[in-house]
Length: 450
Image 1: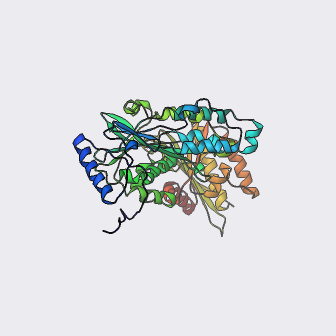
Image 2 (image 1 turned 120 degrees about the vertical axis):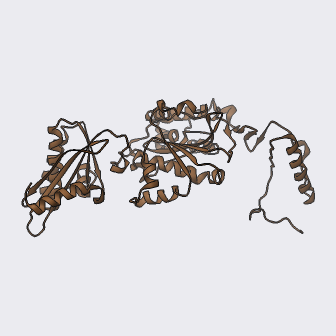
Image 3 (image 1 turned 180 degrees about the vertical axis):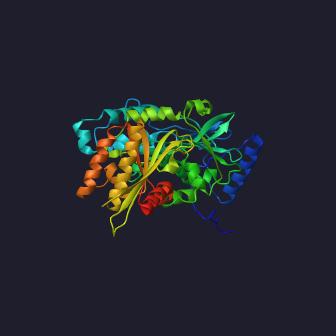
């Protein structure tokens, strides 16, 4: 040909060429082919700058060897004595240098969140910088002691270990070598405003999806299922549910493109920590780091109530489901409530109660209040409360205002009753997931008696 054609549809300028081979003979064979191609296209090579047959080579500020790839940051020699930046531009410059090595720093988004939220006035005033300075010191240590990342091997199963906290989602992509999971890549990001309200299980899903998207070229075509170690059961539900909607439906479709093997873990005793390589931090230790570096108040949102389908399969406790109904024409209504014990979904008590002169929301509040009175009488201190009335649940959560006098009275009754409990977790679910309480309420309304 008269000119060099495109390779994989691209034409790129290559300043440095790095190539490795499993054996010396294979390396010589590949080198011969490479030199022939360079000669054919009249491309010159500087021999003084070339190295052959090396066990490890520096390449684009990285050190590449047969075992994997390591970081050799240019700022490593002077970073230990680097003072905390006195300007916002200095902080941003430091964070920019970290981003180049983000695949080596496991909990970068967890630690960096307090630095990302700094502004010029805060830095110049020098107030409330303790957490930011602690994060800065952590990064100075990490950038000079980054782990070796193993080369991906498509004949071995890839492993994903997600981790999420109130403001960040991160994950490890790894592979097993001699029974120990070694890191291949790290990834993560700080959550946006809407994602801050996601349940922690949903944030783990975000971390998993990020791995599958960002490292797709590495893992696509793997000969074995991708193993995911997760602390929550929502992932299994996403893959099997026929009722997912909204973002859950989108996530389920993305996950369905991959062959996944889910492994449930809780704490260190589940055995995961015992097989983690030195470059991977146990999840519990990451939780401890997160607790010490909680960003400013505006960055962390209260966790949302979880749906019943997100309750762990081994959840032990009490669930109260309630409902209310009313006829607009007669203002006759009813409410119903069922107290369950999990696991097993055993019914401890179920009641329906007729009501006079009520609206639908009135009836819903009656179901909530009477149900909680039953739970309090039984002496239970902690309960998950499930209802399909968005207005009642979100007013009780304080997410929306309550302006009607009749509902304000009911809300005050609920708040007084709530003081008797250790914790009341309110959950809004679709009517499809509240059919038992709905049936009880409808039947009571039709019969006109309890």
